[in-house]
Image (cartoon, rainbow, N blue to C red; front, side, top):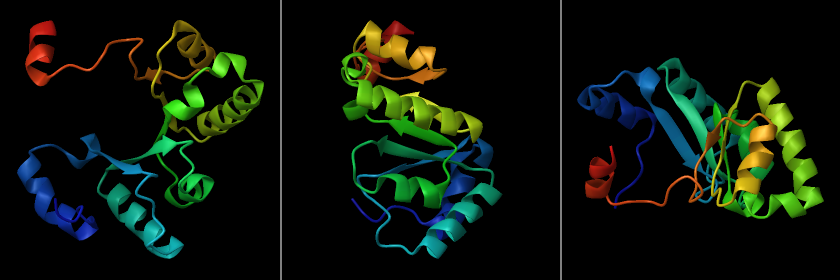
Length: 153
């Protein structure tokens, strides 16, 4: 599969994409983690990418791989709340309080919030009520193969 692109690789890749850097969101997965990098390296690389106009997203918020440490280093433009925190949130007061606090913080920092894995109206309603504007999940539509997507649109 190869090594993921580094900041230096983007210099070679971007001209072939035929899109502006400002339209690119680089998604980092907590699953992969940033433990192999120092805080200084991560901060420097994020600044380089942002200087090119790219946005940064952190996926899998709530999976527990590197959590708040990753968020503090990356200072993402987007966060994607993992299904593990979304599922059955309407009956879990601890997670409700945690999500309220985090969402309020992210909104103050102008971070775009995406709730992933929404499967029920009550999950959607909880996050929508808190001001989350972006959602993914079976509640909206199950995944399709590309050929089926073209038929839907």
